Length: 317
Image 1 (cartoon, one colour):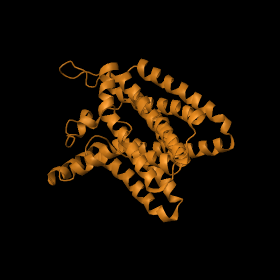
Image 2 (image 1 turned 30 degrees about the horizontal axis):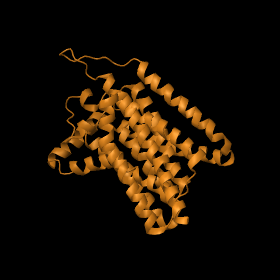
Image 3 (image 1 turned 90 degrees about the vertical axis):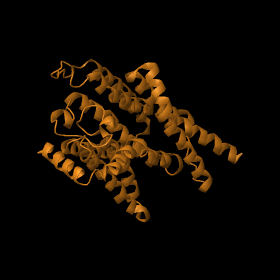
Image 4 (image 1 turned 45 degrees about the vertical axis):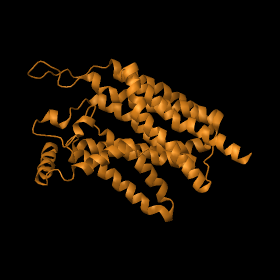
């Protein structure tokens, strides 16, 4: 049934000569490259706690998704059925195993967190519908492009909802017991390294094709796992540093602060474009991705907030 659904979408793509493919590829790319800039900007310039809520929900998914992917080891649709021909260049960006959809577990908590935040404000409640629509469109784009089954997307959305609820409960608890946060950070840090150990030493399918070559190379499948868990490690380190020593507060100073924070987003994109290839070339695909993810998360959780604090102090002085 799932393969037949993808074949139906594939027939539709062919009937319209891939007219919608560039748009669907853009949606998928935006979800994993630019969507995170919205809650980061919110964290820097609007409301620190609400921005953190969205980002922590995202990190929950970044920890759970690779562990599930690398446990289930479900092959991509085109490997399971040779009739599936992914659209455009989507096969190049569809890294890792298939289940669940990583693009959807990225869009789910990031857009979902913003939807929760905006829903509480009657003036901006309409934005919540746009964020939810983006989540659904991201999931559909993965089916449309032929790189994920409906089950992959459904479970990804479910994980996103669970992460949003769990994060809300965690924040409610920490609001009453702020002294416990360091213990949660320590527990998360240990869990991350346990996860790295698990995905490194566990066994993987070693199916061979007719030519005697691996159908899927487990080493390549592990790359995203190292990168995703690295994001969580980077957040934990950065959150501890920011909470203990930086303690910044959003600027909220009109257009000046908006422009400064927008400029601060540019290095996030540049680091991903230029630093990540350098790190993977230097340290290898596993540890290079992990190291980059730590640096990237540290930049927007702690380093740029330090810049904002110093800038604010100079303005007041």
